[in-house]
Amino acid sequence: MAKGRITIYNRLDRWLGYVDGTLAAVAMVLIMVMIFMITTDVALRYGFNSGVWGPVELSENFLVAIIFLSLASTERMKGHVVVEVFSSKLSGKALTSLLVFGNIITVGLLALLFWQSILTTVESIKINEMTYHPYQIWVSPFRAIIAIGVFAYMLRCVLNIIGIYT
Image (cartoon, rainbow, N blue to C red; front, top):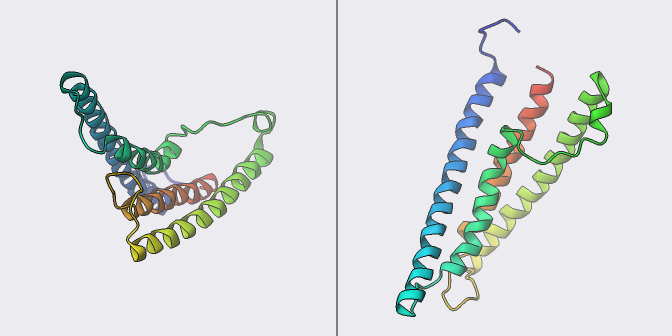
């Protein structure tokens, strides 16, 4: 690969970097909203013995969204926990094969998770699914967020496989 040459891999990596960054930024906003809601609720309960409706219920759904929206960005930064029991003893083609194999397995599992999350999102929309808490919250947007996050993570893993060979 020539120095300074922009390859398709580089373009895909840059584009997916924007997607990863945007999803991570949404996750950060959700964290800030969750912190504000919980702090407000605690302050109102302490000061006025009356809280805000639904911070616990929303926090449950926000946590799911935060985790799945930040998966691809964490993968891009190589921030996932890795156990190097086998890989530390390998080098060259054996290490490359292990990395490709691991990413292929990951992509396969993520594809299944993505497909199932799409199906559950569609079903949730059809039945107008709500939470069972006193304050009903529509569930399907959070189910859709799972599908979006898993898909971005899957694309990042596919890009990892391409990157090993470029």
